[in-house]
Image (tube, rainbow, N blue to C red; front, top):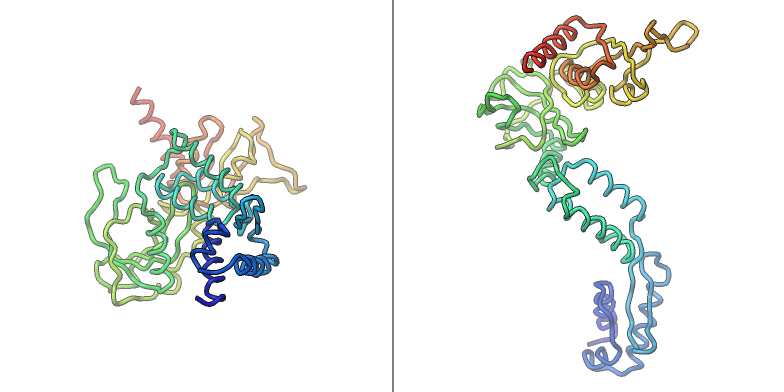
Length: 330
């Protein structure tokens, strides 16, 4: 074996975390001690300009080895893992796989911190919203469908209490995004199971984990002008639920109003002509904006007596009906 091949093989073993014993290398490659020392000097020179590995020589036992530094900033890795854990979106197995992939990019010392954090979660500290472990594959699949602008036929498990429909639908996925605990797909769906009557479609938002059978169609289509809704417009009208018609609302809010502004996309506080915050006689402020009906109703019902709906009348009626049905259950 020539010296270049020997050096390349030894270097590859060190990159895999193997410790190189001088005596063993002499036997393995049928070379002298000086050859091993020259090989290590060359590898050391290769490593020197790098911030990613440190070269070590244990002179007592005549062992050479590398330790990995951070390929990826540890603080950023830790932050990403905290966000993923807090989202509860991934099954335990899938979260562990993501953790291992990210840990491979940081130093051995920092790996232990991530591993300790993941081990602590095994005692029951992590409760995912979905027990499936195929979310990454689903994200990749829909990302490719959207990138290639392909139409699909699909069945979907909806949240209808009476049971989901097995009807096959046809649509064109437009965008994929994450909000709350779930990934969502924005799709222009046709009212037919065939690609026809394209102008008769509607843009819907679907939860990624609820798709059942998905088949990419050979034929595709374009969303008619004036029917296209992008991710930004959907997000700016969404709180938890993306269903129902878009409404303009006004609420009297008696709580800590910055929290309401944080939760309600693009919401605003009513102000006087001088720019001061307008306050009602009871001290409440007026929060207003635009969002989807069902998300608005969910938010109002979750605020208790901190909020009173001023408009629209349809939302007032829906909240009253929901509250009365709740009282009737007691």
